[in-house]
Image 1 (cartoon, rainbow over the protein chains, first blue to last red):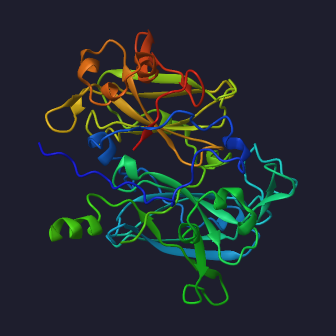
Image 2 (cartoon, helix red, strand yellow):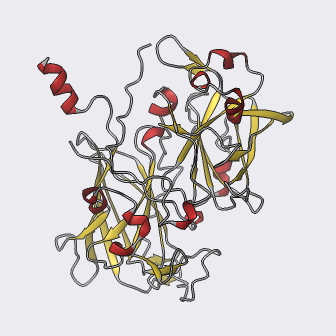
Length: 239
Length: 173
């Protein structure tokens, strides 16, 4: 049997380090030892594929059975592709977020802001054959945390993605264009490369905005590609 | 070439996603040698990690209508996780290599800016001497951090340490 095609390493400076003084919770949770580089076998190149029938979609977070959530209604649409521009079809995306006042429907969140009985804040969507996804929600509020004095998390929605293999599994956060708290946020700023940070920001899109209904935001996501980079291939070809 | 998205921490509120049934990987009717994999996670201060998300993926037995190969559990107030699954068999490595039975593990938590990848192997398996990943670990004591022991029949236990003298071997995948 031929070897599986490995995923490419993440591009330098695009991923946060495990250890950073600016994010206090990393202090006792980051590994001290150098990570062990392992080859990509089928354990890493394959991964879970979720059947829609067993993992029902929740594409509208803006309401529950009992009623509609408070807050600014939003539509988020985007495309999941790999680094070579190929769509990642039929992949599951999990979403979770705070309500419009900046409070999570979670017993651990004791922020003194009201819970919304009509907002739970967890979603699940699947990409279509072209890698596109779309959901409706309400814009999450900012909330304080105890990382440092007067620390506030910017508005954000958490994303969990799987892609084609377990090595492409990634958790990230989507931010909102124009939020002044991003510049002050340790979690956002732990990504060293500025262009990479900016790719975490959803852009307002009037064409996705629905009249009399909801603001539209676009958030495209790129997952790891496989095999040699196009640049490496070009170099190989020139020798 | 497009560039892959940056990781961000799963944070303290990921439990909004949690479905406790996902900790039972046999829930769709998988049959085979049913086992439980459990352990306790501690940090570099020796404190229990009580808010972690532990995910398992295994390429053996192969995915089927009755087996997803994927499980997820949260750690409890004692830092413990427990996942029920089917014991994996050996799987191919690169070239002609064979890998000893193992599951891939990702640990996600507040304070982890990226998932921590590791594996769990099963003590006593003949394949450990020739396993290509275990053989990358020179220090025998560190190799042991990936090997679960059978504490009672069908229950395999391995504690995971995020940092310090007994730190688990984590991978750059």
